[in-house]
Length: 187
Image 1 (cartoon, one colour):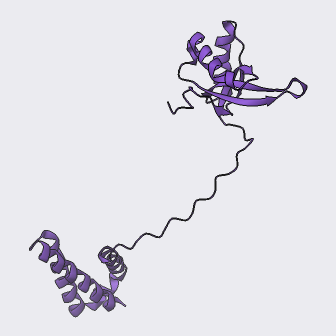
Image 2 (image 1 turned 60 degrees about the horizontal axis):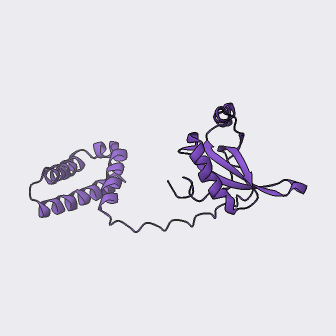
Image 3 (image 1 turned 90 degrees about the vertical axis):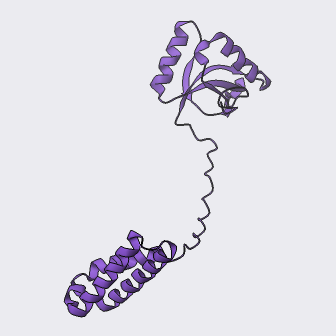
């Protein structure tokens, strides 16, 4: 097995040296490859036991040289991604604050703009709207602002609004983006 490795390595080094000298004669890489090939030939002829002792390292070198000399094969096509899970009804891991509710969807965007004009604390936050079925009272559209990383952060933000006399309640940050909010237009 060791002699086979010597021959393969010599062949690979010879090919490397020829390729290197053809491209640019007497490069340090070509000279080193040729010297190593000569050393391997001499050692194989004079002291085969040394070649056998270096079999593991020569196998690694053989593998590295052959792997680099083979033309790059086209990468196997990536497997089809799994379909996205249906998250309908899933709760967000982000938190928001419920600021007000509307019955008419047409009022939500205008309500968000009006709140932004009166509450500077909303700057940089996004708005979401989510339906809330209140039974006999009907379905309301909750206007939420956020996102906040934790419920405590949302609660602290609400506390600031409540101190100024505004209604606010921490909630999850689910719902559809509101037109004109940072989350709806990518900004």
